[in-house]
Length: 425
Image 1 (tube, helix red, strand yellow):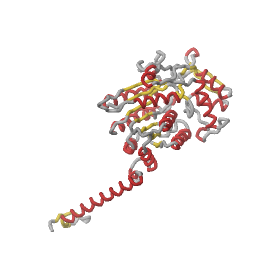
Image 2 (cartoon, helix red, strand yellow):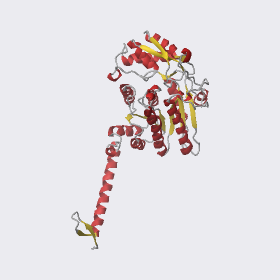
Image 3 (cartoon, rainbow, N blue to C red):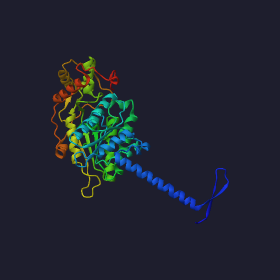
């Protein structure tokens, strides 16, 4: 035996002499022990199809991560596509995730469940999705560690990015929420996407708000969008520019969709249709804003079912990212209805369908960032996606009213605690 020794300092700082062979044996023992432990952990994970042990040091909860792992391990429709939907507990995200799952796709949702509007409605949407096999992970996209862990658990083929801080008027009270949620979080997401191999395709939500103070109607994708009227619009335009950057540098497949005033079942309580329905039920006045010379606000109201059909078409036609055989493209489309209605016309139809009288109070439009009129040219979306909206305002509002009384009771007043007294901006 080699009796060479090495000297070390003991805790008492006395020199000790230890044979080198002992150190070799100890190192070998430690390495074998670590290998054996790792082997047993991996074997256990594979046998249970769970990541619970690994998750002890991971940012996602064990329950959430195990749910994501199990979902992504399923075959789904058998086409190998796996969709991540951000903002899945939101209005449009909920409907899109539901429709993807309905056709058999593998879908994972994320949402930060912020309290911009009552969280109970978001929880209710998430529960519907969970019951249909779509886990909705509570995750802030700015949490890069958690986001990267999510991408390690599931290799997504497509990302539908709908998460955002919504609302035009709320920006006056909390401008930083828009920068954090609409810009910083989007960069965080695209960074996680570009690091995944193969890189997923991105379809994201922009807004008709980016057209800002434009006086050219209908709005067309190649119109200048350099005069945003609100902070919300400015952050959505920033997202469009950032997404183009990732397309240009990393060859990410990118499709942006500019949504026009979406309404329908499971809608947002801060938007006009939902807010007006609540006030009609409660017998409270409805505020209808007017522009200069009593100009009526007019919107290209678009039913959520038509919007989701456009989203699905965008996902299905999105080229692969970083594909040398077929270079990815940067696409941008309007998704609207094309038929413009004044807000008063919408209120009149809504009260007729609810069989209740609305009390309308007209007031001047302040410096809120709202624009007077929106109107979509959908020629490009029709040509590329086959997008053809089929739901007129009365039909769409009828579906909304039906859902409203199913969810809030026959009198429309059975509301969760966090909705009692809620007043949108």
